[in-house]
Length: 90
Image 1: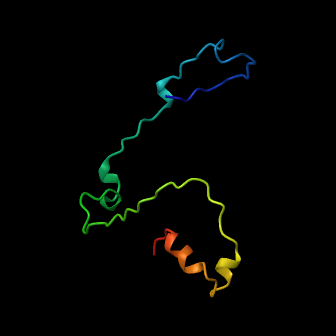
Image 2: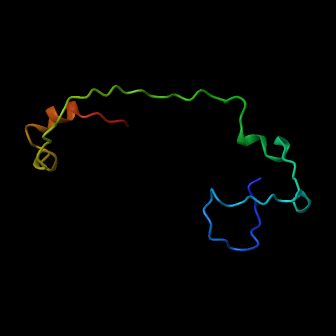
């Protein structure tokens, strides 16, 4: 139990404070069972397999980036080469 009733506000450190035990007469225990919750919260089996796509990321070091004009101008000569190197998921 972590419930402690303080009768007065003492200005002592936690280490120096004397613990006053809580009497169990005022506490009412409650019972909790798995049948109290719907079974949909914890499925036993999945109805279908979930595909987890994996992509390989390779660290290439510092990148100076690309000028914004490469992406805003669709006829930019470097754009096709840049798009080949970009990793994305659809």
